[in-house]
Amino acid sequence: MKNIKLLLPLLFITLLGFTQSIDFSKTKLNPVQVSMNQIEQNGEKIIVVLKDTAVKKDDEATFVKLSDIAFQNGSIEINVLSKLKPDAPAHARGFIGIAFRINNSNDKFECIYIRPTNGRVEQQLRRNRSIQYFSFPDFKFDRLRKEAAGEYESYADMGLNEWIKLKITVDGQKAKLYLNHNTEPSLVVNDLKHGADLSGAIGLFVDIGTEGFFKDLKIIK
Image (cartoon, rainbow, N blue to C red; front, side, top):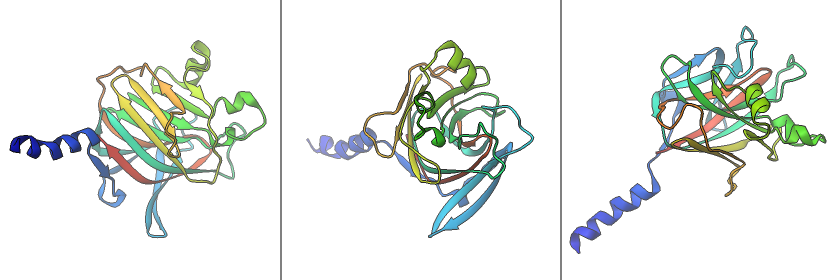
């Protein structure tokens, strides 16, 4: 009985998982085809990310890579805010999200991002494309949209210039995105294209026309 009592706290911790709050000032941050700036607002450390204008294609390796954090399965939580740059092209949507399982050479990773401008427009088709999954390099949004329309995109209420909480849970070949403490996922991906075994770093992802802000990163394993 005594041994069982000793094991209960350990079992409780195992069931809950281990939560790691990331201090950006103490983490190795590597900009990959982006520019990065660290600022502080109201005592909070925030990473500001802009895509390199030399990168013209969409859904590329454009993120700040947290190279010293290895991730395979678990949860990633972060607060994000996106603004459109003054020179943003007409097709810019405030693209911002999280890349995960990034390999060492940055040529394989999974990613889920949001399009905040789509969340409250009057056109339903654009609303249906508020959230996007893609897998680099072979399964970008355009291929997935062509081959499996609606399977890797979904709707959720969101907007520019507001903090949005993202939570991505990953288990083997499955991933889910939760927004703003919702108990039900806004996107479910059942077949991550790199399979169940890929492991790697986490990246703060932006795409064209976006000034992206990231804070309060937590990793739960």
